[in-house]
Image (tube, rainbow, N blue to C red; front, side, top):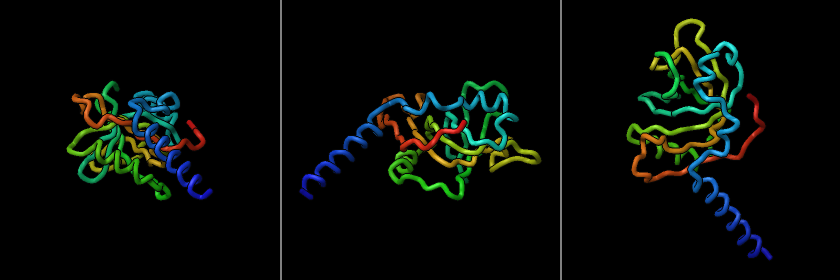
Length: 163
């Protein structure tokens, strides 16, 4: 009996992993606001938890979120992990491998959006910041992986969605 349960658990884990890493689209994309829409009406989202899609980049002392389609000069958002955020080790490892060697990753994440009232946020002196509470998924940015090598979607189970 225990053996059957163990086999079923291992099979279930394999299926979940295959679903999470085998897709090349994010199942949370429909729930996410495009970063450009958030930046276009930043005051409306200031201080609110949002689910947003953008392009994740690592920088020397942290990370930023951008969107290539946004008009205007300042489309960088400083990223900061929330104190209570606990990363899924597999998702974090996969995101780190996607953004290795200055590559970027398309992400959908949840966090508190903030507008700088005085000064700016982070090393890039961004006018905006997201205090990330949950990474929902990450895929290679289409321009950063032309060969298709390593294309995978990394997802985490959904929590209640607030936009």
